[in-house]
Image (tube, rainbow, N blue to C red; front, side, top):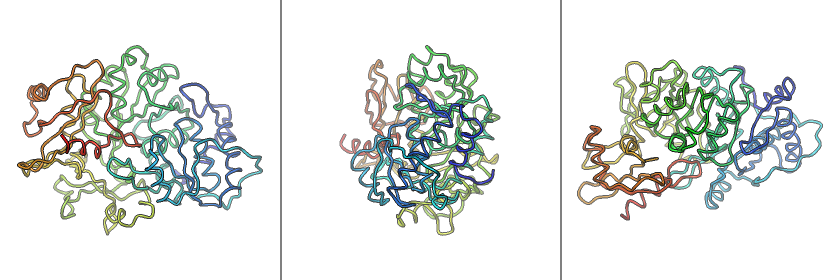
Length: 482
């Protein structure tokens, strides 16, 4: 695919299929390619009178067609947008504004001005810094990730091969727009494909199921927690979801049994994922040709163009040939430009010879299939034994009534650390005891070393970062005080 910018793609759609639907607000209202482009052009005309090209302008808006129009307007105006999650608190917003040097924050749609065209000298190039967003902020204040558009066009090509998009597809993304998963599933891929994208201002399983039925959504993007919440809602069986053919998920470990259940109960849908991060993009992926075990128990085949390798977590030596485990690292077309104005963080992100680390411990088998063992920083060390929090979470999530499980280390004077599990349960689930959870894991044949030693039941949901991921730092703080 020839490198280009999204604004040029939207302009082409506005000229060749002006009345086709671009974005749909699940709560009501929609925009066509013509109205989407005209709105962005009008806002861009206003923005160019306020700030010089390449100024950093923060955007903090609810998800919906409007935020994508504002993002497009910033691109047209040659302004580097700083995407801030709608749920970010005041401290996080202040940090991101200060770190990036953003000179203003947009929380509403800017007024439009008449325009005879935007100065072409303000235009971005595909490899240039265009957008800054934050890490998920699961621990401490987030870092600022720099994006160029070439990476997302390259990502789209990978997604096209994996899911085989068609002219009949209708997309729906329920991820926060400013983050990596939301960028490619809402802002880029549907637009490049020229297909409509259905958006929710705020996620609820009932609203998602209703929108899938109403708009005959074929490609859904949701993190694991969200699709599990859909499965646990009566709305899943109350609505016709047979139009779904692909669920892109990730962001958290994919629970095998619930993913398989999603496929079986929805009909023809297949659960796919890209493994990577906001920083690295994708290192591996599953596709429609993979069997269920590969799709749902692994992160799929490594992507050749990303030159994936495994590094010893302590020495940094290459352990790829042995299959690992090691910290997955890569170098390829879908990586970011690094962290904004943060040399210390960049030194940890990228090795001296240019390999970008994921921070995840992974293995790669003889078929080139990558499996995530857990974050290198998310390992519980009990009595000198390294235990993967991700594996413990996957096992505990099979307990009936559990919506989501999160495992963290609780400091211990004897063993150094013990396993503490937080289980979010549905409102109608009776609280179970630690002994009952352990008995369930024993019946499953789960290794005793993975059994939790502390249990906290949470009604509803676990605490979240602004990016929607579980706030492990907050849970670790709670565990220390148990």
